[in-house]
Image (tube, rainbow, N blue to C red; front, side):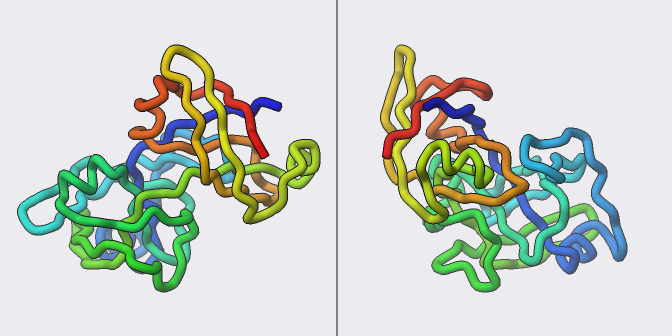
Length: 190
C-alpha cells in the first residue's frame, strides 16, 4: 500500500513562554498556510538560530504553540552550524535527550535553549489506516520510493493519532537524496 510523502523543511515549534520572550507578551501567531495535519499551520513568524558565529535565518514557526520549544533542522544545516544534534522523535519533550543548545532569536528577544534536533523520519496515521497497513504505534517500518533516484528509507517511526492524516514526513536532505517532492507516494514495507 502506498502513502503520500511530505518533505519537511527546517522549522520551529514554540512554547507560549518563548513566544512571549521572542515576539512580546501575549503575541499571537499569524497563520499563513494550513498544514496537512489537523489544526497545524505555518505561521508568518520566523526565528533565527545562532550557534557561535554561525546562524540560520528565516526558520518558520509552526503553530499552534507547544508545551516546549523545539527547532528541527537537517544534518546539512547542523554541519553549517557546527553542532551535532540528535536524530530524534518530534515530540517536544520536557528535556530532549542530547539536543543541541542554540540561541533562538526573534524581533523582541533571544533565548538560549537545548531545543535543536534533526527530526526522525516518521509515518503519521489515523487508527483506521493503521489497521489497513497493519502497523502499531511506535513500530518501525521502511519506506520504498520510486523514480530515477529510488531508495528504501529504513527506521521510519509509526505515530498513530485519531487526528492524523496518513503522511510520511522526511526532511529536505532525505527528500533531495531520493529526488522526491511533496505529494509523491511511497510504499510501506513491514
